[in-house]
Length: 84
Image 1: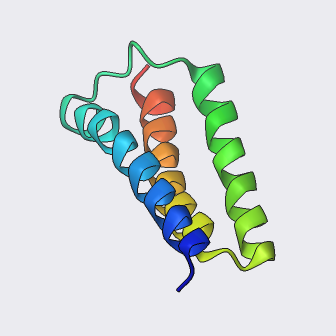
Image 2 (image 1 turned 135 degrees about the vertical axis):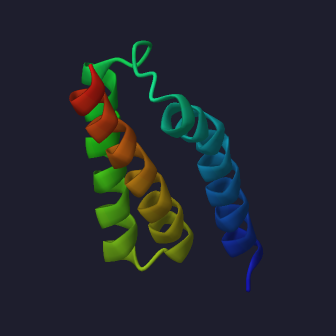
């Protein structure tokens, strides 16, 4: 594995891990009052685009990180729509 691959995996780990506290808080409290529907809609769509981009490039750090983040973001977006 090359240095550039390690850099990609490190970036993927850090950005995905940084999202986990917000997701955990939202799942446990079901408090979505502080979440912007517009922002989360755009964010979720953006993550889906990054996932497609990574898939087309065959860039596994991008694919793995964005698959996890997309699942979490979509779940939070669903909760925002359901519990608002």
